[in-house]
Structures are given as structure tokens and as C-alpha cells.
Image (tube, rainbow, N blue to C red; front, side, top):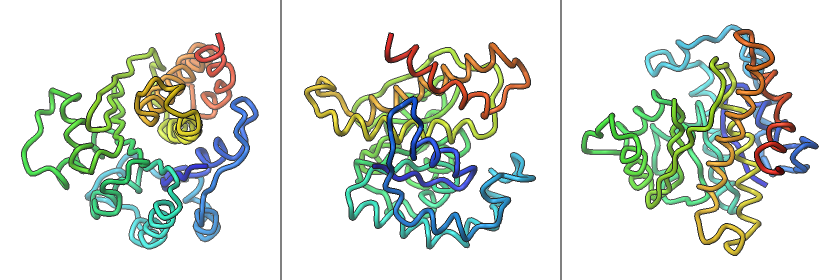
Length: 254
């Protein structure tokens, strides 16, 4: 199994991991995360009323500090059990505050957007990063965190384990949906689990987490592309989730 550490729409990746028949995954070791979910108010799991201002470090959500202890407990328990960890959203805010929590844990994958990536870089890199060279910037951040895998989301998704760098420019949706990153995290958790269990003979010696990241980014983009073809500018992440099965078959089974 794998653990997803995210505090925006957390039910999306959890449901994705707990049993989507289209991908054949039926279990996830989520440690004490379900206990955390049960303690949160309803708007925490539905995203009710939140807008982009809540992504700003100048306007942290009230729940960030309240859940920090719970987040740290999940991280420590996951590392102790050698469980892969997918970190997104407020989990990334926690890592920016306490990089040592994840430093050197090679089964961790961070999935920052532009703002989160900048915050992480400012926290762990002493030298300024050339913002125009995304590949080098992602590689350097990964190295600074002890070669954990970093997936920078953007027009092109760039990912690195500190040694190798991959890009995903697969065609996606023309509309960016709120919650789309959680779909990526859920897909990533599934594919990381599969890649680690496949063994090096089936990954041709490549980093299993990097291959999983490339596959998850491609799948999320394909879901977005197919959903947009049907729903246009009214596309939501719910529409994307409905495309997981068809998109998976199109990418990986044909």
C-alpha cells in the first residue's frame, strides 16, 4: 500500500486508492489518516467555500497548525513501516516548515505546483534557482531533500529523483479543475505501489518512482483531455474521475 498526505479534498485520492475496479487496486495502508478525517469538520473534506487565497502562505488555513501533529505522526509511521508516501497540498506546507521530516526518504514523492515548489525551494536551497530552467530546478530541489522524487506540476510536468529528469507533455484539458492534483496523487499512489512490486527486471533498471510519476501524470492529463472533449468549459474533476478507466485502458492496455 501507500500513504497519501494531503489536506485538500483528501477523500479523492483515498477513494481512488481504496478500490477503483478499473485499476484493480483494492487496499491501501493509510495508517491513522482515517482517524484524522473523522475529526475534521465537513468543509475540510468537501472543500466548501475555499478559494485560491487559501493556497497563499500569507493566508494559511486554520487547519494547518491543528493537523500538523497528525501529519507528522503519519509521516513517521509511514517511514517506520517503509510505506511509500505521496505528499501534496498542506503536506507540502509542512515539509517547507520542517524539511528534515522527509529528507532522504527515497519512497516519498512530492507533487508541488508552482507556488508550492517556490516555497520548498526557498526553504531548502541556499542559492537562487534559475526559474527558467525547470528541469535543473526540480533536480536541485530533489537533491537538497535527499533525492526524494519531486513532481513539479505545470504546463509540462517535470519530475526528478535528483539523478534523472523526466517531462510529461501529454495533451490534457484546456481547463484546470480544482481537485485535479488529488486525482494525480491518487493515481501516483497506485502506480508507485505497482512499480515497486514489479521489480527492477520489469522497469529496466529505471527508478520505479519516476516511472510511476510519468505514468500518473500521463493518466491525469488523459483523463482531463477526455473529460474536456465531452464537457468543455464546464468540466470538473468529477468528470475526470469518470474517465479513469477508459483513459487507463487507452494509455496502458492498447
